[in-house]
Image (cartoon, rainbow, N blue to C red; front, side, top):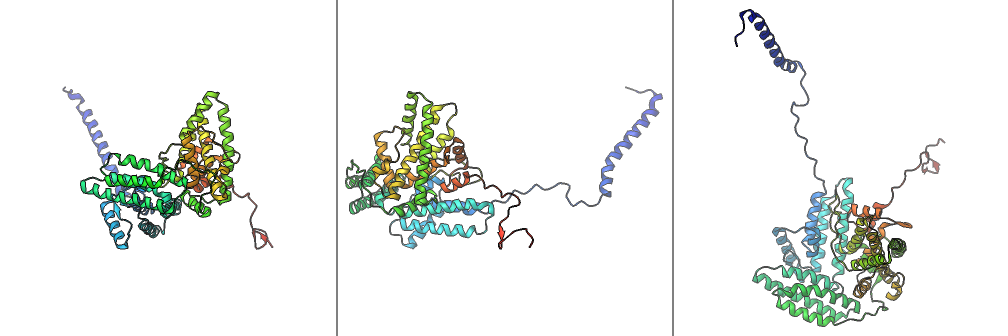
Length: 489
């Protein structure tokens, strides 16, 4: 479109105004920058550096990997495995130290190599100490949990030297290692190794003549070993298993009233290390007795809200849960240790606490089942604590608390045997369920707090649940040199 000539002067003036404004807008930032003083901050700020990793993270991870290389059971629990190079270094150290009892088998140390396990645990702790000399105050709680793991595993390695007590657990772990072998040469070597270990346990049973409860425990432990070997090409191990069963014998009758020949004080010291507890023997028995009473009241109150039929079903379901063995893991934000699965000593109690924490409030049978389960774990723990700490008979100990659940007879026998020969597991489960008790009351809220915190020793969990110490009222100060602080002479 063509503009009339008469309009050209106005158009030209408008274009000049726009051009002047545009130049001014472009020049203004340049002028401002030129006239401004130098800035201490660059125009484009660099990205903020990521926070430094905690000083404990590296040493903690190395410690866990070192421990995973020492025991296939620990490797599964910790979810870690050593590299081929680390295994080679371990095998070299074991050979230099002259460990006669065994070396590296599969991806871990031979679990029967007790001397080597003890030495490697000490090495791992020394390395941890060297790397954590200057951890931040906020990391000390995590470091304490790492040290507690060392104390528990060092105790376990020492206790398991008695194959009449630990042989079953060790053989289950060894059978899993042997059946994982791949290749003809590896399978043949695993067959010979497992047959030798089965023979070691048979020799211990023959020479030491363990009590009837110990023999029954060992006989039960051989069932999963037999299942593991059923489809494997391990003929020598199968033959050695038959020999071990003959050595164990058919011990079907348990003398409930016999006091087993054990050193009760040393045994409960070991229980404290394995469970992570600090209570004295007397306080431990008292705490379990108090928890059993409170949990019985809670269980009866929950059952009373149900019909007779539903109450019986809840008791039956709780009785079935007493025979359940399963991992228990409660991941916790900000802690590697508290996110690990519970060890065997806290596992059953962890599952019971989690049952209460997860029970739906509008389903009364779930709460009733959980309370009965919690009570029965405390009852079995009380049997074990009274038996080992007070030297009463199993009959007398069992008379202090009756099961409220309705387990099968085989489960009842297994629970009584556990009280006698597995005090760590029996008492550990009871101390875990006792955490939901607060004086004369118990609550699902405390169970949920335990689950949220994650895995830790029972003493640590109890301290976490304790109410904070109230601040001292203002105006009250401690005496200083016999005079009230803040007063003039």
